[in-house]
Image (tube, rainbow, N blue to C red; front, side):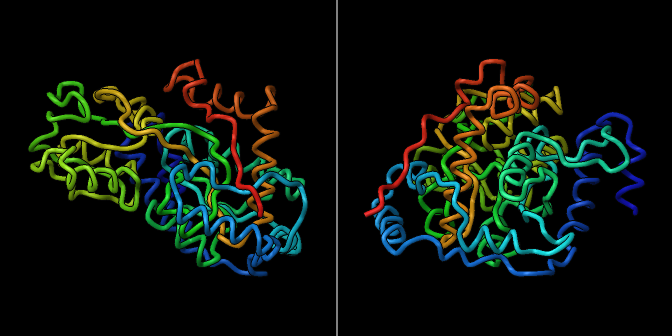
Length: 345
């Protein structure tokens, strides 16, 4: 109730720091709600041949965004278990963010309920509509960055749709869909800052990243390899990416490194900061699921094929609504290439 009264009292964004407090409170309530009802299916529909193909791909990982199963509309054990949930529990359980502006966030101006909105949320509704016939048949679970993989492995969620980059380390733990968005790591800093980008101007600077993010792992690896100045302090990590912007506003850090798509949204929230330099990596977001949920992976891949073809209510429409204001009207740089799938042996 306290979080609801705080949200209702907001008029406009009123500063991202206030919004961060609200989101943090709501996150606490969301994460404390126990999950009950039938368990998530074990997804044994994936064949032994397909599983062997996936394991072989992990060993030879070079392009993780191409290591996913081919599309299919068939129901397997995982999907059937979701459909067998009874009554109000018959919902798709999805891990999301609730404080990433225009991706997954609670808009305080949307009404008393402050429902989740954004590009990722649109995709979740589309998946729920395809599998359960109702776009609102979703139970959202707010999950911190470093809890995305544990939430999947522990069966707390059916999937995670939370600006999650597909990479070689993660495909050892979870299965991914084909990419649904292209981005890259970028530096965010105050407009008055001498930081120019991902270069020597970061020497003796304090950088904030989200714990468990590809941003942190990239910084850590680059510092060991000498690509990032040794004097750059990368020790500041936070549970959620928006917390980095708050740290930056408070002067506790000098820059933030995160996906350019998220950084652009944060710059839109705070006109005193800006992106510095170009993206220095190429990354792809995917929907993450359990390793053995082969039928669900295939189904999501089929949904993504149809979603991208749907010019009226699909990927392009969602981009125009949520992201064009921060990333530009030309969506081509953010649209992933045509998907490639693993071949079953």
